[in-house]
Length: 455
Image (cartoon, rainbow, N blue to C red; front, side, top):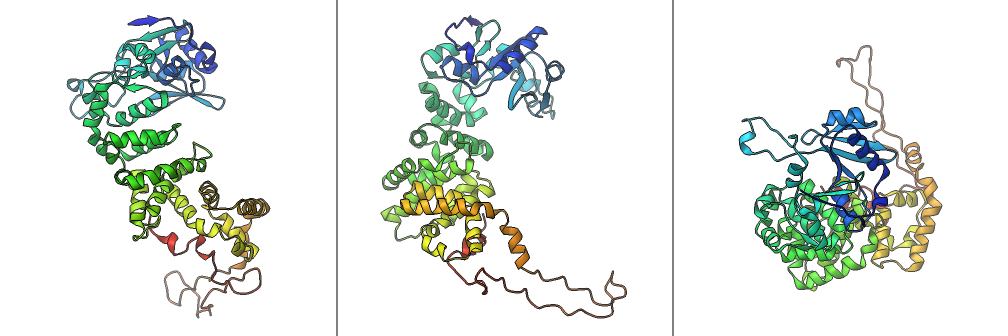
């Protein structure tokens, strides 16, 4: 074990609640440290967003000693401590379990407790295996992680081929860390990533989805995407994007669109915005490529639906909002048509779940003039207060067909002697001008033919 004092570490950046949790557990004779990403970031002069804690105390002991704490998880049991609007994860030191220690048919999961050193050796990269004692201001390093931080090197703990086959998602995590933190991937690890890239096909989609989202949150995600392509890793995550980048013509169009459409993402925590940025950039590259102009393509084509569903792991509601927003782009450019509609139709159009995102896309892609953008913003401000009552208004105008009563003699029908006359059809809905609803430009905005395609 190497213990290093680090006087230049930003002690004042340490969260006071995390400090207090460590102090309380140490006071009760449990070895406890800050661990992982927060220690790494402090040493790299990055203000940590989250503070994780590792301790010799078992979950029930932590729960007993720390107020507002809750044991969570099954496969990996840990304690979640709540302070104001923040949450802190407190995990017991764990160790790897050897095959011979597994009783046949009895799953251990990750709930085999160990020592701090055993816990460090089971982690993925050396830079993520450092412990820091904020009370004594000591750094505990079992894997020479501090040296790798000083040299900005990403190095795997253990044999890279073995560790990557254990968990192929480490390939994506490693490359993401290298771009996020400005690290050089150790040559042996880089070659192992290439050799084992195909193992990603057996990883579960939700974990790939999370890594894709984290890559899209990088300062320059296109650089990471291109490296994944160059290392022949991308084809095992998203073959659709790999095929697009394989064409120099479409690759250039994609990169140009991806850079210019960055403004779509107003909130990096909004997964729909992130996925829209990537998908619409691909869509633009496919539509505008000269070689594709004789093969009309839409966002509803199976190519894009499969990409969103099976490769990105988008949820159904994300896929629906993204698809509807792209459908609205041709309509959102026709402000004069919108002005001729009655107020109820205007409200319905702006209530469409894809409208706000369509505005982001249209403005980012320069599909609107400044006058059109100003018009839509003004219209939305004017009508937004009425959007909530739209559904109630529609219900009062549409009379639903009553249920036909049961005939005499049917089970549960006693005393009914005759059928009741029923209207054959619903009454037509009236628009704001007093006539029947006409077919018009905005009819397919909610439930039209294009919206009924399966996702």
